[in-house]
Length: 312
Image (tube, rainbow, N blue to C red; front, side, top):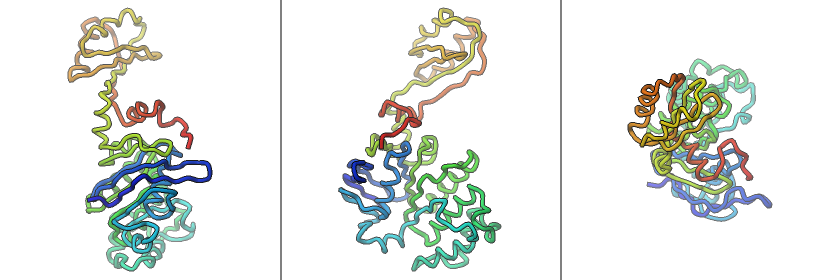
């Protein structure tokens, strides 16, 4: 069952094409991620799906409703994450939850709101002003406010931006918990690792267009990408390492500063390389492997890495 249906969505601001004719669906009960660099069109897309922006062209159906025409009915059924500057600094955590509960006809009863704060680790922060919350606590509060009316579909826009790695992983656990309660999550992120680890399906967007859409596993598998082995071998010349290129599982060998990078494929790739190094008495250290990632998918489809500038 589709909870979001987008067909040929286009959004133009003056001479700037922010979203350029994209189509996709979000399935009930999944974590759907839209990933791409800053300026790629992620936020504009999610705001059109929420009903916060009117598309220039194309059609959007969210929970079977027209987000523009049926906005009031839709807002009762979706949860939208706030941005950090949206709350007054002096507003307390508990007050914010009570305030937002008044915005909906079917908000959670008081006991369930208390349970929500407890589940999100905010019960002890009930009386703490917004300005005194940490970055992770603020994001958990934003999730609580998005869930205060028990919505079917939750939108999270760059939820973990600015958080440290530990807080980011805590957020991932919370999002999975939401999905496990039968909710659907539509999130945007510019962190490829986040999309790869968290999402059931991913749409990669660049310059307003979707360049790939599938599960993270299928996207990575579609590359047929090489695995990498990286290690340090001091004082060893390229001629001394050519034996590695004779291995059937090795596709190429490159020096990279103090490191060597061996590319290859196959179940025996790592074992074969390590055995060959030992057999040829090559002293090596700091060996590690690198598997293909969604970052490699983005590079293959766009010709640049995610930290490159987007033109939109």
